[in-house]
Length: 545
Image (cartoon, rainbow, N blue to C red; front, side, top):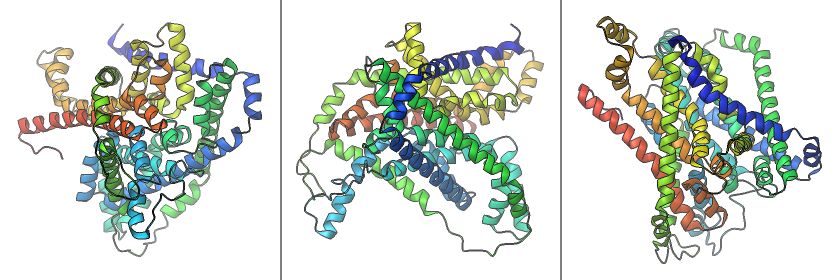
């Protein structure tokens, strides 16, 4: 095969298993009897209504907060600090964050105890602050987790070759024409950036609508969201119930696609109005500059969640309304120490999956021109857009037919399919912006392309490659559904242990495992940061914050 055709290798390696899993997932759902049972189930409509409300609220609030934060902070020191903090925020697994947030907000949590000091409560309030019937706690958790992802997506667009500099020049030009910073962003920058953020926003919508792990901890239970209901049916021993779960997952996919198409059509229909609004020429009156409070609150909540996990993991007897436990206990950590095999397995699986994702990402970018990235975007974002319960059901059937269910190889395949897209998205801006003149010089000096990659290009890209690996590692550590389905219950990871313990009400153990799940990717991100620091020191430049 010529080098020109080498792009088929990474494409088939990723898209082949993904297409097969999707095929099996849809095939299991195409059962008329399953759809009849689904329509007749009394929980279906309320669960679907709840999922739509939670998904729409979470996505809308996350997008609006992202717009406000970027508009208010971009170009300031606060934006630089926030950008530096994004990897740490993204590294916190969804399940671990949900467990910490639940411990923080539950009726006997630290927030209620602080209020009790002021109100004189002697017992926890009889109010559902988590798993409330309206899904408010789940919406809050989704917003707090998805805003960093959207901010990261904006930063990635800004870093693309030439785009950041061009947009910066346009902002300066708008300022010289009398437009305030906020008006310049709303009329110049966002009209260009928003279409490029369509896939990340769609990924947020898909996740908010179909999330399972966070919904198990924060979401309502009577009824649960439709994704949780589908997950419960897919775990049932009865084949007919499994097919009803697959039908529910496919119904979620259809609803997700229908809403997304409706929003895109509305965006197109409103184009004339938007064009008139953006080109009206009027200068809005300046308003006092205000830095969004949301970014500082969000970072503080993340810190409070992690602190709560650490606190609860060693809290023994702790009666309400005391702010401090009467007794401390290390029993939870004794159990964690005894579960070193779970930690080792989680780390090994995440390392293998992240490395596979990195190899696929580098192979793709080395064998395809930059404009092909757009063509590959639907496949890259497929694992982010397809509801998890549908995809993992197909993955389970695929690994079952291939004899990989319950094996490390099957889990490696499943986790790699989820990690690879994130690795590619994280690495692409830096990799694509590498100056091609280095390659031309190396080839002119008689070096083969492999020698150029090994001795010049990859060492120069060591920092973004390490960061992309850390992203893939963090994605693998968060995977709950693939581990549970494809692993067939034979392999425990930190994610499955933490959620199982949280569902069983073992708060101390759940907090310890959740904290360990959060610390594991944080260590890998710290190692990636250390790579950047060493390279900066070697080049005599200041290390990135």
